[in-house]
Image (tube, rainbow, N blue to C red; front, side, top):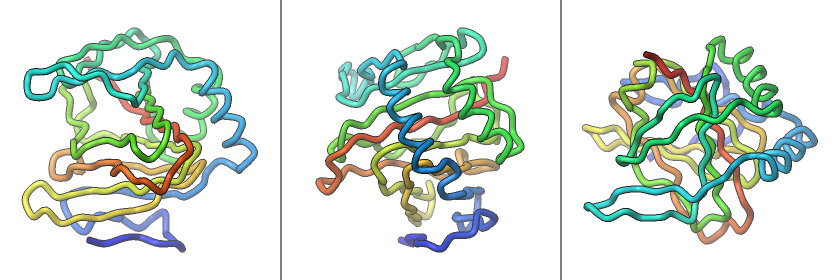
Length: 202
C-alpha cells in the first residue's frame, strides 16, 4: 500500500502502472467550498441510493443525485436514474473543473456521505454509457476522507487523502485495470459531498 501525503504534485500520476490518476489538491478556497457545500446540501434532490446485492435490493444510508445537460439514463447495480437539469452551482463547479482538466463533461453523479460510517465498496466506473477511457473528475466538499485504488490483477493498493475543495482526475485505462473505494472510518463524524463529473456517450 502506498499513501500519498502532502506535498503533492498535480502532474504526478498516483498510479504506478495501467492507469492515470492526478490529485490537484484544493482548487476551491475554504470560503467557496463552504458555500458550495451548504448550497448543494440544500438545493440538490438527494435520495437514498439503491443497490442489488446477492439478489436483494438494499437501500443505503448514503444519498445520491444524478444531473446532466440532458435526462441521461444511468444504470448501475441494476438501478436506473434519469438526469435532472443542471443547477447554477453545478455549472459553476463544472466550469472550474473543465478549465483545470481540459475535458468537457455533460453529467455529474453526486454522493452525500453523512459521516465516516458511510462509504463505497471496491468498484470501477466502467458502465457502457460512459466515454471509454475518458476523464472522470472527482470534487470533494466537507469532511476529508481517505480514497483507495486497487489493481484488479496484482491487488496493489494506492491511497490518497481527499481534502475539502479538492479535485481528483481519473483517466486513461484506470477504470479498466483499477478498482477504487471510499473506506469507512469511525474517525470522521461530519458529512462529505462528492461530485463525479462524467461524459455520457450515445
